[in-house]
Amino acid sequence: MNTPTPGATSAHAAALTAEYAAIWAYGPIGVRLTGPDQEAARDAEAAHRRRRDDLVLHLTDAGDSLPADQAGYALPFPVTDEASALRLAVDVEERTAGFWQAAVAATNGAERERALAALVDCAVRATRWRRTAGNIPLTTPFPGRTA
Amino acid sequence: MVLTWTVMGKTTQPDPLPDGTMRHSRRRVLRVGALLTLGGAVPSLTGCDLFNQEPPPDPLAPMVDEALVLAAAYRDAATTHPTLAGRLTPITEAHAAHAAELARITKVALPSATPTSSTPANSDATLTGLRERERAAGESATRACLAAPAERAALLASIAAARASHLEALQ
Image (cartoon, rainbow over the protein chains, first blue to last red):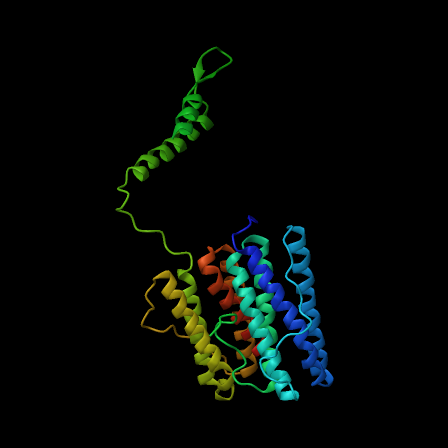
């Protein structure tokens, strides 16, 4: 059931660049948060690091070339306070979910299972950040789908 | 068919008895009977006109109903417990949107009648019940996603993720 699907490699490479960017973004997010929120940011960053490491191993094992991590990433808006940090955290999880959703369609078997688990994690974390930010509603009907 | 006939040829061989006479053992006779029944069914299936059969039901068709039942459960819960409506209404709408998308890709017509649901009078019990439903529905979407062809997998993944996030929103 684990036959390579055309497009799986590029979908994984794209998911990896999304994970690089997510890890980077949690830096500016974390410094604007305090207490349990900062701890949640640290946990989220660690989860994205695990996904990144997993993808690096997976792509390396398959003999595929790795996309390069950047020294920095352009933020979609300036992060200057707690509110903008929480908004970026929601944004990061929503965007990363989109890459994993694309990876679901490009894979099957164990690879699809991994991509689905990553998408679910992003959707759940986005919901938690919306709750922290006081956003209503807490959920979106189609996580990963780009509007 | 070939296999059936070969086996039948073998099993119809009579057993030699100690006195030298031949007879069919009871078990073999029963087995032949079963094979004949099976063998009889095969030509009637292959003999059908190729285009005269009902297409097999879409494996995702039951998920349309599942999403509609979920939407009805949340709608009823929000009516019974207006204090929960703020949390439950967006989830109701998400389940209804899932039903519409699933109906679209499976080409199943959405039923005009909405399923009925009953909600416990206690709001904690209501939330517990909804969490249970959501957990089971998340598992069913996950299973469907892992078994689906590529063109359906993305939607099913999104539905599985939505259901997981509903569960989080109900915590």
